[in-house]
Length: 129
Image (tube, rainbow, N blue to C red; front, side, top):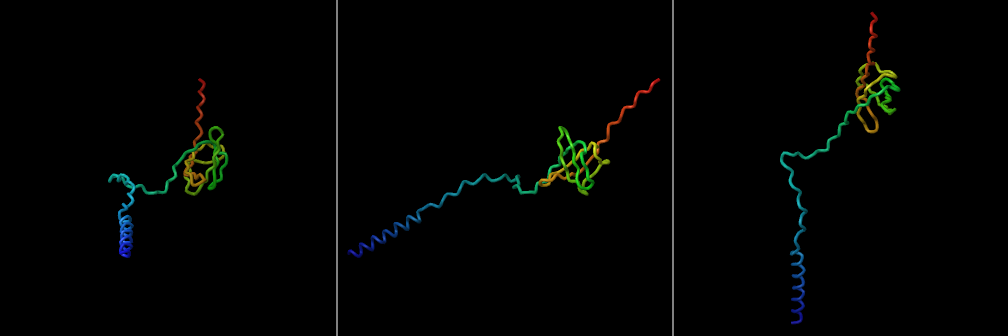
């Protein structure tokens, strides 16, 4: 009888442990985010295109095909790399008024176009009669 009692206690202990494991509810999943509307497309990582910027002033230094340094308002100086793809409008020389369109490429500023501003026309002196 004692042997039977030990077997029953062991059997009940196994059932208790087994039922405890089976009774555990699976972890509740995190609440799902609201599904995206069908019309909205998922965003893809696209390489950002450099935004074209503009700077104007007087040419302080110029090396054809290499660089141009412009002195702008409030004595702000900026240097730009000039490449074979840079579009030139007018004759660039030191002291000329120019407008530079450029894009940032890392830490460099690449001139995409350089336009020389023609000097203002002088008014003709009134003719004496």
